[in-house]
Length: 177
Image 1 (cartoon, rainbow, N blue to C red):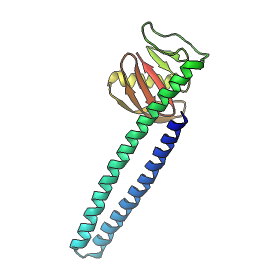
Image 2: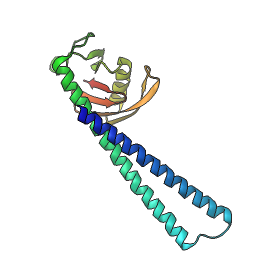
Image 3: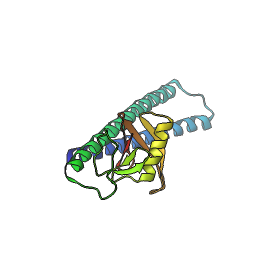
Image 4: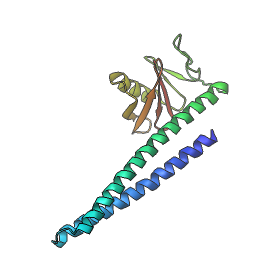
Protein backbone atom coordinates (compact mmCIF):
# COMPACT_ATOMS: atom_id res chain seq x y z
CA UNK A 1 0.00 0.00 0.00
CA UNK A 2 2.97 2.30 0.65
CA UNK A 3 4.06 1.75 -2.96
CA UNK A 4 0.69 3.07 -4.20
CA UNK A 5 0.98 6.09 -1.89
CA UNK A 6 4.47 6.90 -3.22
CA UNK A 7 3.28 6.51 -6.83
CA UNK A 8 0.37 8.84 -6.09
CA UNK A 9 2.68 11.43 -4.53
CA UNK A 10 5.11 11.15 -7.46
CA UNK A 11 2.29 11.53 -9.99
CA UNK A 12 0.90 14.54 -8.14
CA UNK A 13 4.39 16.09 -7.98
CA UNK A 14 4.91 15.50 -11.72
CA UNK A 15 1.53 17.01 -12.41
CA UNK A 16 2.35 20.13 -10.35
CA UNK A 17 5.68 20.58 -12.16
CA UNK A 18 4.03 20.15 -15.56
CA UNK A 19 1.32 22.66 -14.64
CA UNK A 20 4.00 25.17 -13.58
CA UNK A 21 5.74 24.71 -16.93
CA UNK A 22 2.48 25.13 -18.84
CA UNK A 23 1.70 28.30 -16.88
CA UNK A 24 5.16 29.66 -17.64
CA UNK A 25 4.87 28.92 -21.36
CA UNK A 26 1.39 30.41 -21.50
CA UNK A 27 2.68 33.58 -19.84
CA UNK A 28 5.59 33.75 -22.31
CA UNK A 29 3.24 33.40 -25.26
CA UNK A 30 0.90 36.06 -23.86
CA UNK A 31 3.77 38.48 -23.25
CA UNK A 32 5.17 37.86 -26.75
CA UNK A 33 1.81 38.47 -28.37
CA UNK A 34 1.25 41.58 -26.27
CA UNK A 35 4.71 42.94 -27.03
CA UNK A 36 4.29 42.33 -30.74
CA UNK A 37 0.82 43.85 -30.74
CA UNK A 38 1.87 46.93 -28.80
CA UNK A 39 4.92 47.62 -30.93
CA UNK A 40 2.87 48.22 -34.04
CA UNK A 41 5.34 46.16 -36.09
CA UNK A 42 4.30 43.22 -38.14
CA UNK A 43 5.25 39.77 -36.92
CA UNK A 44 8.52 38.53 -38.32
CA UNK A 45 8.65 35.00 -39.68
CA UNK A 46 11.07 33.95 -36.95
CA UNK A 47 8.74 35.31 -34.26
CA UNK A 48 5.79 33.57 -35.87
CA UNK A 49 7.67 30.28 -36.01
CA UNK A 50 8.69 30.72 -32.37
CA UNK A 51 5.07 31.26 -31.37
CA UNK A 52 4.00 28.23 -33.39
CA UNK A 53 6.63 26.13 -31.65
CA UNK A 54 5.50 27.44 -28.24
CA UNK A 55 1.95 26.47 -29.17
CA UNK A 56 3.06 22.95 -30.18
CA UNK A 57 5.04 22.64 -26.94
CA UNK A 58 1.98 23.74 -24.98
CA UNK A 59 -0.19 21.16 -26.75
CA UNK A 60 2.35 18.42 -26.02
CA UNK A 61 2.47 19.42 -22.35
CA UNK A 62 -1.32 19.42 -22.21
CA UNK A 63 -1.31 15.82 -23.46
CA UNK A 64 1.24 14.95 -20.77
CA UNK A 65 -0.89 16.58 -18.07
CA UNK A 66 -3.97 14.70 -19.26
CA UNK A 67 -2.01 11.43 -19.16
CA UNK A 68 -0.69 12.22 -15.68
CA UNK A 69 -4.20 12.96 -14.48
CA UNK A 70 -5.41 9.67 -15.91
CA UNK A 71 -2.50 7.80 -14.32
CA UNK A 72 -3.17 9.52 -11.01
CA UNK A 73 -6.84 8.52 -11.12
CA UNK A 74 -5.87 4.91 -11.92
CA UNK A 75 -3.42 4.90 -9.03
CA UNK A 76 -6.07 6.31 -6.68
CA UNK A 77 -8.46 3.56 -7.73
CA UNK A 78 -5.79 0.92 -7.15
CA UNK A 79 -5.07 2.43 -3.75
CA UNK A 80 -8.77 2.44 -2.86
CA UNK A 81 -9.03 -1.20 -3.91
CA UNK A 82 -5.96 -2.09 -1.83
CA UNK A 83 -7.41 -0.26 1.18
CA UNK A 84 -10.73 -2.00 0.63
CA UNK A 85 -9.00 -5.37 0.56
CA UNK A 86 -6.96 -4.56 3.67
CA UNK A 87 -9.97 -3.15 5.54
CA UNK A 88 -12.26 -6.03 4.65
CA UNK A 89 -9.74 -8.56 5.90
CA UNK A 90 -9.44 -7.18 9.39
CA UNK A 91 -11.41 -4.08 10.20
CA UNK A 92 -14.88 -3.49 11.47
CA UNK A 93 -17.36 -0.68 11.20
CA UNK A 94 -19.63 0.39 14.03
CA UNK A 95 -22.38 1.72 11.79
CA UNK A 96 -25.12 -0.13 9.95
CA UNK A 97 -23.92 -3.36 8.41
CA UNK A 98 -26.80 -4.38 6.21
CA UNK A 99 -26.22 -5.28 2.61
CA UNK A 100 -28.68 -6.32 -0.07
CA UNK A 101 -28.86 -10.01 -0.78
CA UNK A 102 -26.67 -11.23 -3.61
CA UNK A 103 -24.33 -8.21 -3.49
CA UNK A 104 -20.89 -8.62 -1.96
CA UNK A 105 -20.39 -5.41 0.00
CA UNK A 106 -18.00 -5.52 2.96
CA UNK A 107 -19.77 -5.17 6.32
CA UNK A 108 -17.90 -2.04 7.41
CA UNK A 109 -19.85 0.02 4.90
CA UNK A 110 -22.69 2.24 5.99
CA UNK A 111 -26.06 1.64 4.37
CA UNK A 112 -27.14 5.13 3.28
CA UNK A 113 -30.46 3.89 1.87
CA UNK A 114 -31.71 3.56 -1.70
CA UNK A 115 -29.09 0.90 -2.45
CA UNK A 116 -26.19 3.26 -1.67
CA UNK A 117 -23.30 2.23 0.60
CA UNK A 118 -20.45 4.43 1.81
CA UNK A 119 -17.05 3.57 3.23
CA UNK A 120 -16.15 4.97 6.62
CA UNK A 121 -14.22 7.76 4.83
CA UNK A 122 -17.34 8.88 2.95
CA UNK A 123 -20.41 10.70 4.27
CA UNK A 124 -23.84 9.39 3.33
CA UNK A 125 -24.82 12.83 2.04
CA UNK A 126 -21.95 12.79 -0.44
CA UNK A 127 -22.63 9.16 -1.38
CA UNK A 128 -26.31 9.91 -2.02
CA UNK A 129 -25.39 12.97 -4.14
CA UNK A 130 -23.05 10.79 -6.20
CA UNK A 131 -25.70 8.08 -6.59
CA UNK A 132 -28.27 10.65 -7.71
CA UNK A 133 -25.85 12.02 -10.33
CA UNK A 134 -24.87 8.53 -11.52
CA UNK A 135 -28.45 7.32 -11.80
CA UNK A 136 -29.54 10.42 -13.73
CA UNK A 137 -26.67 10.02 -16.20
CA UNK A 138 -24.60 6.82 -15.83
CA UNK A 139 -21.02 7.44 -16.94
CA UNK A 140 -17.50 6.59 -15.84
CA UNK A 141 -16.70 10.08 -14.50
CA UNK A 142 -18.99 12.18 -12.34
CA UNK A 143 -18.08 15.86 -12.17
CA UNK A 144 -18.73 18.40 -9.41
CA UNK A 145 -20.40 16.22 -6.80
CA UNK A 146 -21.16 18.34 -3.74
CA UNK A 147 -20.07 17.38 -0.22
CA UNK A 148 -21.85 19.15 2.62
CA UNK A 149 -19.13 17.89 4.98
CA UNK A 150 -16.36 19.87 3.25
CA UNK A 151 -18.56 22.37 1.39
CA UNK A 152 -16.62 21.52 -1.79
CA UNK A 153 -17.22 19.80 -5.11
CA UNK A 154 -15.36 16.65 -6.20
CA UNK A 155 -14.99 14.47 -9.28
CA UNK A 156 -15.50 10.71 -9.03
CA UNK A 157 -14.58 7.77 -11.24
CA UNK A 158 -17.17 5.00 -11.43
CA UNK A 159 -16.90 1.45 -12.74
CA UNK A 160 -18.55 -1.94 -12.57
CA UNK A 161 -22.20 -2.81 -12.27
CA UNK A 162 -24.44 -4.00 -9.47
CA UNK A 163 -22.84 -2.57 -7.50
CA UNK A 164 -21.20 0.34 -9.29
CA UNK A 165 -18.05 1.45 -7.45
CA UNK A 166 -17.21 5.16 -7.38
CA UNK A 167 -13.93 6.54 -6.00
CA UNK A 168 -12.30 9.93 -5.86
CA UNK A 169 -12.57 13.11 -3.83
CA UNK A 170 -10.81 12.68 -0.50
CA UNK A 171 -10.64 8.86 -0.20
CA UNK A 172 -14.32 8.54 -1.12
CA UNK A 173 -15.55 5.02 -1.80
CA UNK A 174 -19.19 4.50 -2.76
CA UNK A 175 -21.20 1.49 -3.89
CA UNK A 176 -24.40 2.05 -5.85
CA UNK A 177 -26.74 -0.89 -6.36
